[in-house]
Amino acid sequence: MNKKIIISSIVILIVVVVAGGFFWWRQGREIKGSPEDYVIMETAEGIFVENKKAGLSVKVPEGWEGKKIKDIEGGSFIIQTSNIDGKKINDVVIPPLTHGCGIEIGINYKKLSFEEIEQSAREVYLRLGTIDQRFERTIVDNREALKNIVDTRYAGPMIGIYVPLSDKVYSFTLIWGSNEKEKCIQEFDKFLETISIK
Image (cartoon, rainbow, N blue to C red):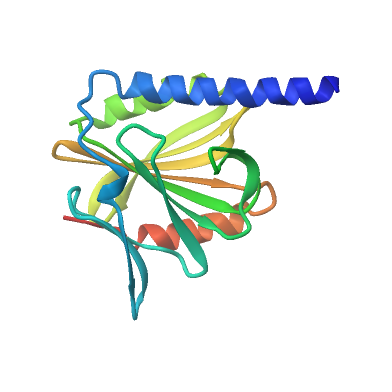
């Protein structure tokens, strides 16, 4: 009984910290996006998710599924394996995962520099109990991007990719179950190669 109370308290704390961090990060930013901006298209080459308003198109990894997230202001889209498992809030599995892989796609309609993105990420993940965090530059769709590799006490490990372009920041965040790191990262790397930003 005591263990259930502690686990419930930790889950509530994670949700409060993540939501607080998210809303702090969005503070002063005009919300221009919506979950309805994301459209799923099935083609002969596979399943694609497109957001015409943001000029974004990505291919869903084979065997994965997509889901619009309406509970986040501005909306986002999650691509996940069918075996994803963990705690759920409003039918969305939240980190840390026990099984599977998940990729969250988000768009922030605000011009931010690499330094501002890094500072925001540090502050958000600090609230989740940062254990280890590092940043490096990478390339996504022939554009310079910021890669954030982070492990946290309350939400587990994640990799975030941030692509600032004009007045937007495109973000792609990978989470994985404890025994599926290599497989999930391999699929994430393939996924990143399918990103098209116009």
